[in-house]
Structures are given as C-alpha cells and as structure tokens.
Amino acid sequence: MLANLKQRGITILVSTPYMDEASRCDRVALCNEGRILGIDTPTDIVAGFDAPLYSVRADNMYQLLLAARRATGVVECYPFGESHHLIANAKFDVKQFKAELVEVKGLHIASTKPTIEDMFIKLMKQ
Image: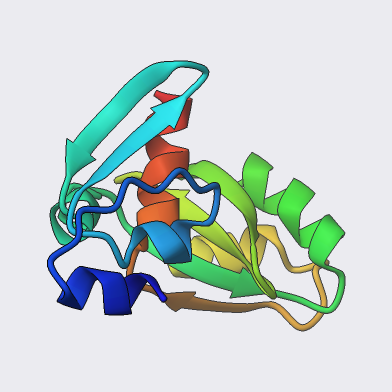
C-alpha cells in the first residue's frame, strides 16, 4: 500500500517500530526515548555500521547468548530472528571465539551484513 502511494508522488510520514518497514522509506529518522539517533536514507544509515558483524547460532540459543557476551572481543550480542547478531572489536578472533565457547553445542558462526535494525541497536547502545 505504501509503495503504491509513493509511486503516486504522495509524501508519507510513517512511525513504526518495524525496521523492515522503515527500510522501505526514502529517509529515516531513528529515535529512542525522544532522541534522534540519526537521520538519513536507509542505505546510508546501514553504511555507517563500522564494526565486524557475525550471525551466530547453536543448539541452546540462551546458553550461546550468555557465553558470547563474555567472550573476548565481543562488543555486543543480541537476539536477531532465528540467530543472534554479534558485534566484534579488533580483539575478536573466530577461532578463539569457538575455543572459548567449546561447551556450546552446535555452534555456527558466519560473517553477515548489517541491517538498519543492527544500526539502530548500535546507536542505542552508544
């Protein structure tokens, strides 16, 4: 429906907690607790994500979340759909991460591309 209105040249102001909806807009203002965290196009907001990002999964997702948050080089780890997203710093090493989480069964880690939701979470934490 929004795409149809946009094609007609109608300006639409949308307030939504759903980042997939926000990513369809021409410009986005990310807000938290009454503060504007950033204003730009969805593409440019995501382009500002300047840290390594990984998707992690395991048999026991809660155990993984707790262990990942304690691992060397992990800045943040948070639930993201069926996986967790992990923001890393310069000290992060995938092999060391796997060694530190050896007790976590079925561990899978892969580099992933950030979304507007990742950037929103990152900006909220700053």
